[in-house]
Image 1 (cartoon, one colour):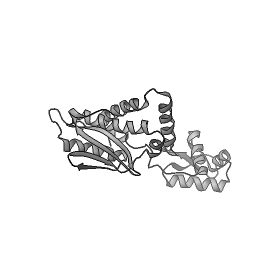
Image 2 (cartoon, one colour; image 1 turned 90 degrees about the horizontal axis):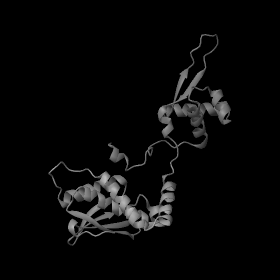
Image 3 (cartoon, one colour; image 1 turned 30 degrees about the horizontal axis):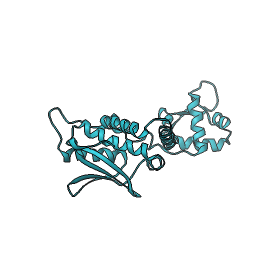
Image 4 (spheres, one colour; image 1 turned 60 degrees about the vertical axis):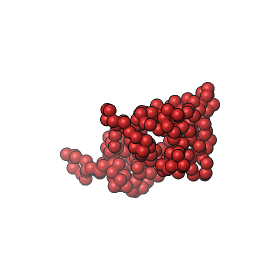
Length: 234
């Protein structure tokens, strides 16, 4: 997956969800930066030794920690040590929805003409996400629409390209930012329209995203495409 594809999904989305106690055990290993015994972990997170051992073994099975035997020259039974794996730092709960609500509410309240600002932001990112064709090759309307649909599908819009009379449309059956869009429609939906406009502009496509009708049905938004030289702004 290239860098542009990675920006379309949340990092760590496939990471395992850990309960509170297990997260604390993993945090203890990660913060220590060194190997710990069961007793060390139990003392740091205030758990019974058997409970701490249970969570440590589960972290090992999940690939988030490593188990090893202490190397020692002195007599006595070597201790079992646990160490956090490097990828363990990327696990845990994500709060991107809260971040989206914070940013969109700030834009709506503090930025003059937030819809126009959001449209510019969307266009910039749409141009970035476009996969430009080789030099001297121009995409026709069908190919450009196809690439737009694939990009929107990667983001999670469940798009569908249709023709209504003489007009091309892209139906968006799912909004991956629905909660933020319902609260701050002007900002979020303008970003979505800008994404589509910027992507098609970067492709030098013969079609442009003319307007976006949000929530024409509870689970449907409609993007109207037009000839590029006849497109209008949001």
